[in-house]
Image 1 (spheres, rainbow, N blue to C red):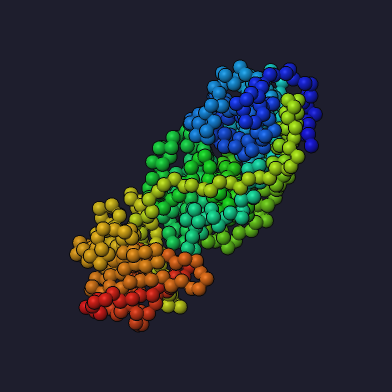
Image 2: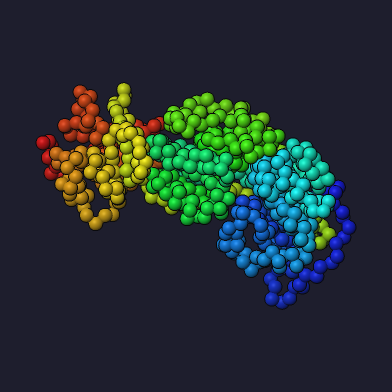
Length: 586
């Protein structure tokens, strides 16, 4: 079906000769040239959602360019080059000299009038919501719907304007009424791809560390001083150190504008301590959508990624609302007013648990419903729009309706696993040893919760000296585990328990009086593979040995009976074998 907008003239454009097919070509020569226009990394990544709709087999050849002038354009040329399109990447000057049959952008600026092509503009976020007076010149119209961006000398620049919901047509009528006839509801390909990816949730969770009973908290921050990071720059560190490491994985999604403005190195320097404590950082190019699918809780702000999470009924807490920079009539502003708040100075762990218990998907459903229309139909609607504008170039619409592609796997930036913990524990009513390990971070002053446990890779000058528990996590180390443990007790007089990994499901445990065991994770029939963290096992042994239970479990006796370790909702049953020749006491 050909998509037509009433405001677009269908007069045939002049013929533009394309190179003919010669004997060196495998496929037929293209019939139409399409230019993909980006101003920021965000708009560039959204173009990748659209590109599969412009099929090469239909005779479409794509080119790329960067529309200059954005404060967030850093790294765009390198990004396009990384996609393997360097030979089709044109400077803006070259792009404005060549004729094209269509230009597609996921952001708009009236300088795009310089292109010799019908221009289609699509949203690069969850609709049009943010007030950016520097580009719009308007304190009431959101970016993307303002007269300054959409017109030049009284004429509307885009040939077509895609919106995700008909609600946006009303706001467009208020800011630039002459552009309304160029607008069409096409939904949101990004949301459709997120929804299509839901069957991959477990895969994404595993790649983000949400395994062995861990649940995933995703921290979302947009850009600007009103954002989560702009108002609470220490929240990533506070969050990752406030949550027990065996119960939660924490990932951070930062708007690409943050990376463009402050550089990759600058962002990673600011997050370094949180990353050392276990924070996973999602790169700006891709991965945030997989994190949205994988997450259990969202700690966010008024950015689009938080809203996408709400569309999947995730538990949402806002650390910043950004109402000062939102169109008050937009669904995002309504979302910021209605969503539950996070008290960043309060007990973060308790607030997450309370929010989970009180979570009501119906609370935000009206806002979500007013942000997106035509669910799961955006690929077809957008393709109809694009091919309708290419009809004069002799490009026929595909017979089959396209399906949205699942989003790529998340690939968090490399970080170091936590090497130091503040640990609390007790014996539960059922006899299980309950352990909570909170990551420690340098120069992050907190009141000690319990005892310290460190790995042998910890470089802090004091923490190993203060630790009750030391563990070696490397299986194939040069020094035999029994020798390593003996040397550790000789080197650290305050040490109580040492553990050393022997395999993924086995570790050696030694206490100060010289007793040694091999700990093995019990795997019930049909259960997933067993994993045994030597730090956790050594901590559990220390808790059991330090607790006067009146039973023969761990204290001054042999660890003959299995030990059940509880971390949050997960139970791990560990059995022990006495090392040959090990002394039985004192």
